[in-house]
Amino acid sequence: MDRLVEIEHVSKLFGGVHALENVSMGLSQGEVVGVVGHNGAGKSTLMKVLSGALRPDGGHIRMDGQEVDIDSPITAHHLGIEMIFQDLALLDNLNAVENFFLGRELTRRVFGVTVSDKRRMREIASRALAEINPNFRNIDTEVGNMSGGQRQSISIARAVHSDTRLLIMDEPTAALGPEETEMVRQLVRRLKDQGIGIFLIGHDLQDVITLSDRIVAMRGGQVVGEVAAGSVSEDELLGMIIAGRCPDHGTPGPGARA
Image (cartoon, rainbow, N blue to C red):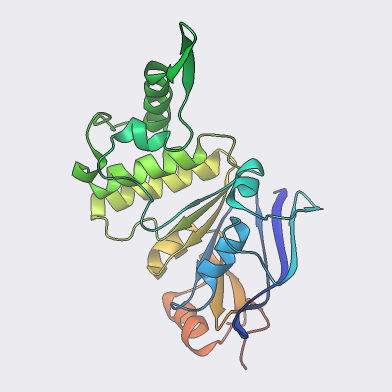
């Protein structure tokens, strides 16, 4: 697989405290890399750096082998990087189309006046949502009245609509029921098959093991180690997260303990 992104020795300080310290990891096209760790381990901070929401204090990020300066979410967007936050960033009083195009509405000129191109937006949003969730039917319903799985479909469809190459998913199955969780799992597999690289942040270790190709564990702002998802158990992941112990079949990082 072609290497899509390389994060090299990235550090981030908050008031003298290392939120990230010498963090390195990579992701290839069509690969899912799970990132696990307790709250405060640094995983969300790292992904905010990658998505342009935070500036690193040290280190490098390379895409396709070229160093990039991701100084804002707009820059990340132009590079094909999108992040789906746990709260999904949807407005409950708007419908699926309005949320899909929130902040990037399409317009057209009518008798010299610029107006919203509602028909085109509806067509594009409907097609994009159908690709993500073929059973999505409630395009005119306010998002606040939708199920968690339907809301997740909108958020994912919006994120992957415009030439997305790298998708960051923060707890994509949190607070979902079994049926909707399985739908999101299928979405992740379809996006992977389309060649999109995915960083998957998760606390449900079995879910992360099931969906990922590789898993990186973080602790105290450092990488404890990296393991192949097919060869690691939940107990071994817990040992990495809690005690900083990398199993013998893994690759230890700077945060690993003997």
